[in-house]
Image (tube, rainbow, N blue to C red; front, top):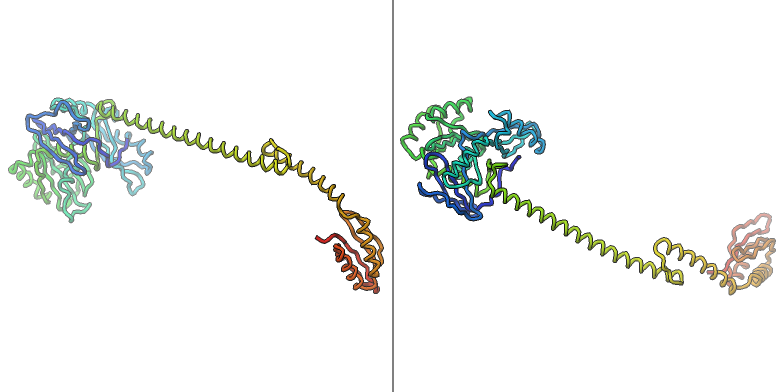
Length: 453
């Protein structure tokens, strides 16, 4: 499962347990907006048995009991990369990936087109052992972090560096604990790796740095923490051995004995890079299981509400559509009744056909009535023939029908035709010549005659 580089915290306070040494260091931390207030418990103090609903216990796995690796996958797609990350991690592990809890953090694109991801893993047996050690110290941990990454992020938070620093600066965080020590290597603000140190930290660091760097990276940003950093004589001896081959600027974190516990608490309470919890799966704390169930129930309730809203909107839309359809049916029925002249109960195409038949029947009846009251054809014929005779027109043929009235004939001159047209116009008839022939001194003509509109 790939996680983003920053997470949103949900706890408001935390008891962080540093399990280094015979006497674990316990810090009670409280979140206040974007800051954290720390209170170091006394050496013989324990975590309270009853905790508030937003207070949890957290601890971290030692560097020697956890693994962090940057893994490259040849896929730019996050989904494709997620499928192969467990197999790629399995190659890096000295034990089967099925036997460990693992997370994949801070996915990044690389120039070759693939992705680069920080894998964090630990064997289930080590996670169980850390749970038991934490319970023995008085608290059942909800979150089990990783010491190497926790030390790195806390060092950057407490001492970000100066404005002169750039991404190429090599930063080394050395945690000198009561029973174990570790070296965390990074560049700029990016975590690279964490390594466990033995009884001779200076010798082990020299060996590790020679493996990491082919040549000295120049001025190194050294950061020291842990109870060993509070011992000036021990610290000075280590720094003297490193000064020749690995020179640089040295910074000692304040309250160095509680540094690791502060780092664990900060990562629980504030968002930031490389956050992780290896107490997961079948080893997950019951509190997280309950929170997961509540989130699932909230999500289910949200989906139900959304579904009900969709149903309500659908019902409302259907009701509105039905109402609109009824209004349209009533309007169409009124228009059809008005057009047909009698009540029309049919709808749609059937109503249109009824109206069409009714209009055709009505038009036929109206035409019959119009013919009854129209002027007679004989009277029109008499008027036209008298006008032709009085203007010297010889009629050759004449047609007198309601839809086709016309005549053909001859005249001595076109002026006779114009006088004929004027005569008809005075009685409401309009004559339009459709053919004219002046050959041989005789005007031959064809007229179409119709009433003026």
